[in-house]
Length: 220
Length: 220
Image 1 (cartoon, rainbow over the protein chains, first blue to last red):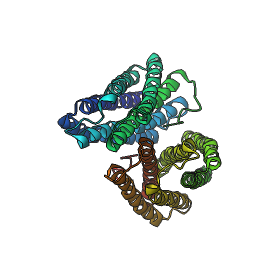
Image 2: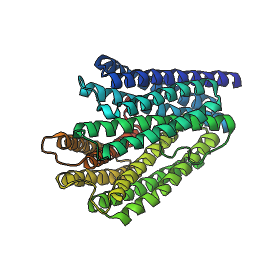
Image 3: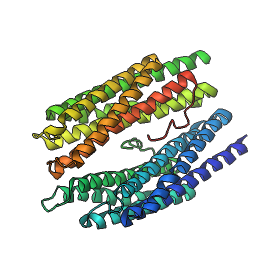
């Protein structure tokens, strides 16, 4: 029984990595579509989000089946419950990526944000891509050093998020209302994407080290 | 054992209702603070969000203890897993409410949105309050008629959300960038608040009727 359980846990882990890799591909394409106004790439991201959704639904079913058949307790139980939560966060990361792609498609053939902010969004996008790739790596290796790196990169995303508001609310901002709306939403999506990654990273860190952070669910 | 389990499930249900009531109070105060630029009310909402957070953390621990001790299967297992998910959505609803209060506080003594949009936000806020109250009622009574009502009200919130963008992007919009940012964020928070309620309502509906909606997690 124990051996079967370990195999099933391994299956859960592998599926989480697969979904995280889909998310990493999604955000990589979404930020490229966003930065380069590539509408066909944007549509690809939107069309492929269902793969992430299906992956998370299937994973949830597997986790529930494991709970029912294996009746895990203690740490094993927490691993399975954490997998359910990680799955929910990955699903939302896919949604954020899709929203970024939708902004790119909606504004086509124009670029989503005016020149002044393109550098900021390029940096934010690059950070989100890096975060997503490190997240997949963290889920695969459980190397908690990566969790720390993800947190640091999230801090940078937060700083950029605030700087978008500084720009938009500054006296020099000449953007139209549509630019302001797009910049606000895009910045929020990028920031939430990174937040979800941090939330997942904390759960992995907890599972590996056993250090429970009472704020583990706060803000996500 | 079975009887203990039923008692524990009842405890889970009662706690979910309690948290949902805290959320309903929170959104009621937040929308009032928002509409009336009441900064002390806004601060109350912000200060009390930790009660919702603590409630959800405690509920999650209870649910995990039940899984470990009672080893539920089939429908009982799904009830406990659903409770974990409902808890996560309630926590996010509290966050959305807090974000709305933060906008009110940030803009004080000014109102958050210009005159033109105040009616729309008053309607959106009233709908969110009604949705939250019905959600608490739904969790208490499991009357699935309420789930249907929540869905219908969410459709109205979505319409209002789109109408905010129509206004902000229309030729007659004379708001400053700060107005545009606030309207965009506030509208998004109201919309997400209602989305989470629908997601919870679907889970309750599923638990009561057994009809599984494969999109039950999509979009939240």
